Length: 315
Image (cartoon, rainbow, N blue to C red):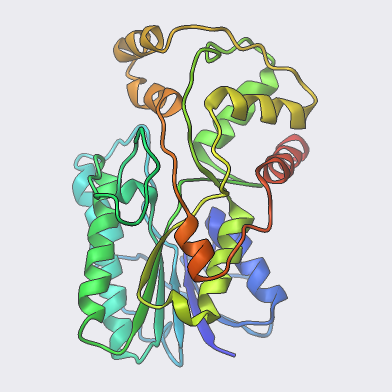
């Protein structure tokens, strides 16, 4: 079985991926800032202080067949960096290009890169496909698209193949960010001014993403392909809140406040991006990965939300 290097193993996706890879008896190299406690004789931990354009990956890449690159600087609604564009480029673009170059030199056969739908857009009125134009409108999205381009360009003159996955909002037990905030809001039982929103957004349960990554490890049709990936069931913001409420045993009170009013109120508070994500649409057509890899998400949206809520209520 292939020896795999996984970066970003202590993050939200990484912790779920690690447990699944251990269950399936893969041999792993993992990288962390601190030495990771040994959880399996098939795991080798390599300490990497910082992931940037000059990181030395020699030890981590020893005898590696496949790299799964999760580590990244995540999108932040409130970014306090002096130059966010430069910070995202350093961590997400330049660092990825460096890892790709060293992977090629080390004889790695396949490189799986977890990108983001943000490499294409943050809002879209129509379902995005792999052939839709890429017009990223955030520093994070631009850094992810540039990393994708670097990966493909560097691999073009080598024998190393690649797979790019572009997920939307990922949710599941231990999820950070927007979904965690939404769970907290619904759990308060307070009225939410979101009842008049009529949008469509795709989501991705973390277990479904992990299943797709593992499929890409062995499926020959995954080579040199970019895939958009989702649960396959788009929800409006009110529908999502109602499903979360149902999983919590609550009936959320959704007030029908016009979206235009929400936008007007958000501007002076500096919350415009948050509101845009709540009222805007971002549907994804994930038919390509289903057809190409004969892949079906093993977990439904309702199951994934119930698992997420159970974790939240019992943490």
